[in-house]
Image 1 (cartoon, helix red, strand yellow):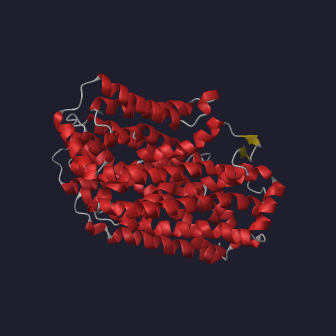
Image 2: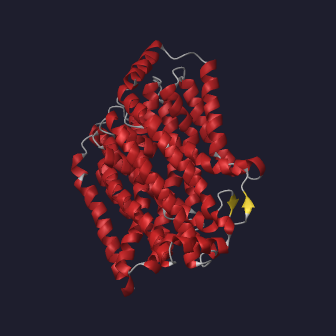
Image 3: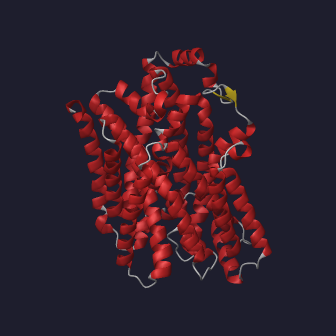
Length: 496
C-alpha cells in the first residue's frame, strides 16, 4: 500500500480542493434561486466549462475510450453526434431558454418553466416532469458512482463497495453545502483538468510508440478496419445506415438534458452566450477526438490485456499507470474523478430542485420559507444519492450502458417539448403532457425490446414519437390563451 501513497496524496489534494469550494459557497446561498441557479450571475467561462464538464461524465475517460479500444475510430460516430448536438444546443436553445425562463415568472427549474409557460394552474406538468427527472437521474447518477467505484477499485485494489461509498460521500459533501455556485465553480476547474489530461495521455502514448506515422502503421497492421468510420473494428462488420444514425442520434439528447439546460438559465446575460458557445464547442471537439484516440492508442500500446472480463473501460487508468510516475499519475487519474463528479453533482442538484420546487413546494408546502426549501433540497440530495448508490451496487453495470439509458430518456421526454415551447406558439399544455409522457415511456419501453428494428437506439423513436404527440395533441385541443400567446410574442421580440 505504501507505493500508492503518492497517488493517495494527489487524490487527497484534489478532493480537499473540491470540498473547500463547496464550503466557501455554503454561506452564499440564502434563497433557492441562488442555491439552484446561482442567482443568474455566472459568466461565460464558468458556464461554458461547467456545461461541458457536467455533460461528459465518467464516460469521456472510461466509456468512450473503452468503446474505441474495442471498435476503433468508428466509436467516433457518437462523438460526432455529441459535437453537433452541443453546437446546436448552444446556438438555438441557450439564448431563447435564458430569455423565456426569465420572462415566464423567472422560472429556476425546467419543470417550473413548463408550468409557467403553459399557465398550468394544476401544477401537474411540474409533477410529471419531476417524476421523469427523478427516474432517469437515478440511473445517470448511478453511472457516476459506478465510475468512481471502478476507479478506486482499479487504482487502490479496494473492495468495490467500499470504493463506491467513498466516491459518493465526496460528491454529496460539496453539492450538499454549496449548491449551484459550488457545482459550477468545481466544474470549471474540473473541465480544465479533464481537457488537459484527455489530450496529454494519447499524445504521450503515441510519441512513446514512435510518433504518429508509426502509430498509424501499427494500427493498419493490426486491423485496417480500426481506421474506418464505416466498419466496426470489433467484429469487422460494416455499419448499416440505421446503425450509424443510432450513434449520431445521441446529439438529439442535448435538447432535453436538465443538468445542461439549467446552465443556460443561470448565465449572467444573454449577450454572454455567444462567447460561451465558442468555448464549449472547441472544448467538446478536442476532448471527444482525444477520447477516441485514447482507446485506439491504448489498443496498440497495451495490446489485448483488457479484452477479458469487460475491463476495456479501465483503458485510461491502465495507460496512466504505465506512462507516468506515481504522483503525476495520481493527478491524471484525478481527471476521472473530475469527469465523474462534475456530472454527478449537477444531476443531484437538478433532481433535488425538481423534487423541492416542483413537488414539495408546488403540492405540499406552497407557503414554505426559502430556508425551509433549501434544507429540503439538501435532504433530497442525500436521499437521491443513497438510491443511486444502491443501483450502482450492481458490479455488472457499465458506465456507457447507464448513461445511454438516461440520456435517451431525457432526450425523449423533454427534448421535443423544450423545442416546441421555445419555437412553436401553438403548443399547449395538453400537448406538453403528451410529449413528456409519450416520449419518456417510448424510450423506456423501447430499451427493453431487442432484435430487428428495436436495436435502434431508443432516443430515435422516443424523440420523434414524443414530438409527434405534442403536435397532434396540441392541434386537436384548444389553442393557447391570448395571455400565453402575448407572452410568447414578447419573448420572441426580445430574441430579434
